[in-house]
Image 1 (cartoon, protein in one colour):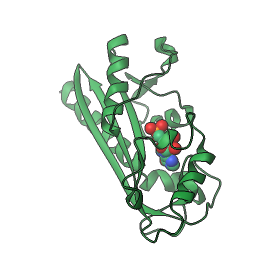
Image 2 (cartoon, helix red, strand yellow):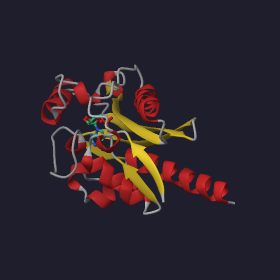
Image 3 (cartoon, rainbow, N blue to C red):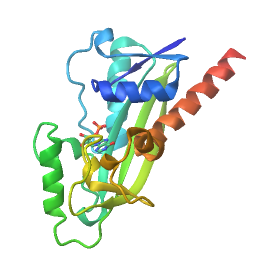
Length: 198
Ligand code: IMP
């Protein structure tokens, strides 16, 4: 079984990604590697942040590892909150305040187009790889739904009528930015391991 460090402290993400990778892989937590400090993420892009986190863990542990970073890009706001999605309204990860600020900034705007973008940065046998997943959609006028987290209650994916927060988690995973990025990453890992076993 291949062991790989997932540079996140989010238990929810850990489970989600573990389920998609399947049981040939064992995800190692930061705590298990003795990393208890907050990993810096102060790059100006989503890809930059994902790489920064993966490199940080690789430098300290030498282990194969990956990190993800996500942003919500809203066209009418020039791509904001983007790389600042977690800290849009406050310094902490206050989902409610972020969502309220987003709806306030979108008041009166008819162009509601937006997308979630996830980048996964992987360091495997010392080489770096990047995988991206995007879902297009629009920002609603009002929040709806109790599932998920973050901006889920105000985001309706293209071709859907419900927000991410109104969908069952399996449905969200099937079409979401993170789901798409994780599947690309998982496909790559399987191919890589099949090749190196030949
Ligand atoms: P992170 O890089 O995955 O921590 O995401 C940064 C921020 O983007 C989070 O704090 C959330 O506000 C938002 N976000 C990330 N993924 C999602 C999602 O699947 N739904 C809604 N918001 C998300």
